[in-house]
Image (cartoon, rainbow, N blue to C red; front, side, top):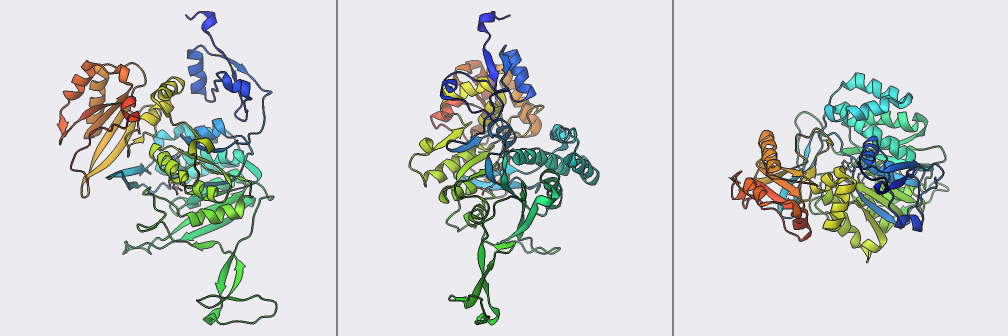
Length: 501
Ligand SMILES: C[S@@+](CC[C@H](N)C(=O)[O-])C[C@H]1O[C@@H](n2cnc3c(N)ncnc32)[C@H](O)[C@@H]1O
């Protein structure tokens, strides 16, 4: 039992709370979930509720968060604080996306869903009676308890938080495709109210390739626009409408214009948009899968975010929304759970501002091994998420518990159409050769060719290195490699098979 003097007394702040300068100096622990409260209790942190300290949160600068948007929204973003939300989450496409990262082809993110991972999400929603709970029960009847309901439960929880953080004059644009748009629209109505649904925008694009034999070529996405109330902000946009036969009409009171195509009038912008996607030869391309065009975000931001407003993208990927907001002089908050996405954004936004770290608060990604240690002590799960994806191309496991000893996955092309699987395991604390042995067993069980075991330098023993070496080699590299946080910060990377494409 610890001595009473060792017990830290820490105040629990509500999520909207903004500390003053003096408080920033002291350690503030913010347990926002039952797990964190339990952990705080374990660490013998005395928790004092501070109900008075509610203020609205005007973010002092642009913010980029690494983490799951559900946690970040709950813990970091105040109610009624943002003007516009655009989100382009996974679509439940049941696809794995490929990307070139460095000079290797990886599967970049996994858009597949499991009911076993979403049961808590579902029950969290249906336990609060109201239109959304009814909608979710209805969706359970339609879809059954499987991947679709898992995906929808995951989305519903995040959309509830989006509703909370939006100002009463704000709008949300939910980017999806016809796989799930019909069910997502019901969820939006359950949260925002059917009367606040404004437009279903069809983004039409052309891309080459597929010539399907059993259906029309699928060349559009959908963007569902809802507002928080009928006081929503809208700056009407116009577009050219070419006259029939491209000749002037000369109607009384109608202004007509001419360009090199012919005569046209300016009309209110329609709800179907022809905007080129980011193709292989596009100048905008940053090599991140599912990158959306700047022109799409430019249009949405101009229409629905006031000049000094704040734009939030909780699934910001390689940062298209952020770059568009930056160019248009809006403030922004971006969130992504993928380390690689955050790295791409850092590079992308640095093209627009001289001092990235001076002007942007980059939260959640440790910048030194010491930061990583602090993170490991404060929030073991966030640390795992980060460390499991240190190797470019690898991604942290969606599951928080019951992951069978696997914290991250990656799939690397080693030949044309031939991929190998990599898994990672992270230990923030004590390690021994038994951990390497167990990890190798987990690797074999899931059939992965390579395993990356990540921990801190000081925890690695010769026994662990010997155990890793005894697991043998795949092609020309060890099957299990110990990769330390310190290796990462000096730019060292694990060995990959030399024959990758
Ligand atoms: C379709 S992509 C977004 C692409 C983005 N609109 C762009 O133009 O780059 C979806 C992104 O959501 C991220 N993501 C998935 N689940 C997430 C979560 N729970 N919290 C935050 N980001 C998440 C993925 O890492 C991926 O980068």
